[in-house]
Length: 160
Image (cartoon, rainbow, N blue to C red):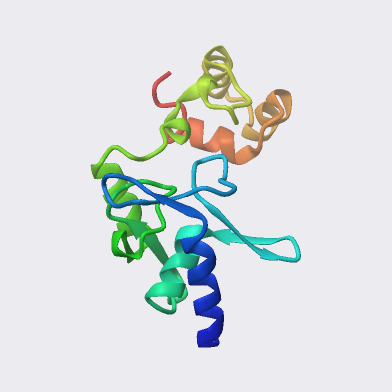
């Protein structure tokens, strides 16, 4: 991208932050539901503010790389607090620091995407033990055959 575009982005970032006591540049404009700053490019297009800051102040972001926070402040766009890492490295770093959202770690019927209850899983296991087909069980519980297969293998709903 053209150097002048990077300069424009850097100036827009500088005018959109407040610097806190830890040196974080806290994004003051729109933020996503999970707290990351959103940089408006115009034309209805947005990007993560910390990624734009990295690009504007440091340089290109290679394909497949995450821009990670040393400070662990999602709304921080200080380039000194940002570094590149793979998605795996980023998730490992976040997990070590207990920064991973626990929403995706909810189990069973407490998971927001769950279609089954614990009692349903017990019934599914009972039907499997009686020789019912996975396809017929899946239809009766309005789930995919794969869900029933994973339950049968003990790879899903292990806690039940």
